[in-house]
Amino acid sequence: ADFSSKGPTLDGRMSPLIVAPGKYLLSAGAIPTRTGECDEGVPSAGGGKGGLKSMAGTSMATPLVSANAALVGQYFRDGYYPTGRRDTDDALKPTAALIKAVLLNGAQVDMRGVDNGRGDITPVKPYDNIMGFGRLSLINSVYLEGWTNVQAQVWDDEIVQDTKSKEYTVKIDRSKGCQFKDLSVTLVWVEEGSTVGCAKCVLNDLDLTVTTPSGDVKYPNGRSSKDDTNNAERVVVGGVTDQANYTIVVKASNLEKSFQKYSLVATACFGGVKNQLDTSDDAFKTDESDKDRRNRIITIVCSTVGGLLVVCCCCFWFKKRRERQSDEQYEAAEEGGEEEGAPKDIGVAEGEEAVEAPKDAMENKDE
Image (cartoon, rainbow, N blue to C red):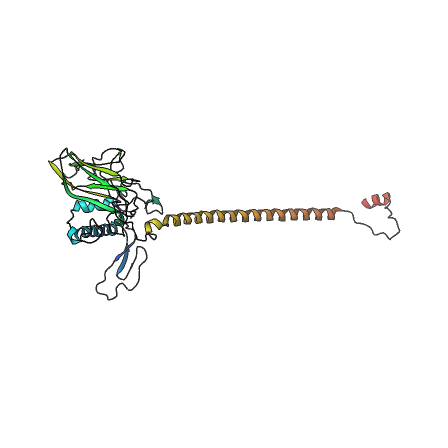
């Protein structure tokens, strides 16, 4: 939501790490003493009706993330990894670090921005302190045969010794129809508690890099060098080559103890089938709220300009009308003056000439 807290943390770590919808979600406003409490229908945004409420904030986004974390845990415990089909022989108990790594690894950054509460949108970018790793998306986090975009490889509860490193190799394989274009790798470790008010709270620093077939080294969290601040790191390599190998390295750069445990997740096309799920109605791809906002702005501007034009035209018309009336009155006054001061004609019979009055008579009349 627009009023939710933003990062960074006091010691400079990225926060939040992941985002989920949290603006006016439908939730429970339980009235346990009433039968049919939800029969009144869906409430308006921010309102309540019967046993239902529309609410906003992290109180709505956090349950969404928590529910998806629970699903990821069940995914591993029920044996869906790695085949994408349930097999109890493949069941495993994931650590908290692995569940967190899975969620962060599949988070999407295809967001135009976030509502800032003023009818406008605040732009965001990956690994900032507004959306972090991005928008939660399980369809890009785990493999369910025919239902998700990626396949996954995970290494849970791994151990690396201080100053040492561990290397992993993954091979891109689109032979069975998988169409995903990228490779995403995420490293997460649980940091032991530091002192209150610490200026640098991550005491056991691990570093993640991915090396491409051409030898290009990719660093995490959108950086051009290692990250020694966060205890969650992700590298995304776009447009990976089919049948090519990519090398993942986890290095213990500076530990307070002799070793550190961690979890590592990689997603890409690893020999799975393509997603058969119809995502044409994906709200995050078809959302036109920003377009609607632009249309409203255009409508308001056009209406304002149109109204001003109408007022200007009316003023111009009234001005011209008054000028025309003034001219007509002036012409009428001039014509009336000429008629009042002009000599009157003396009637003369047809065939006779007008006779001018004698000058003496005129002078005597004046006297």
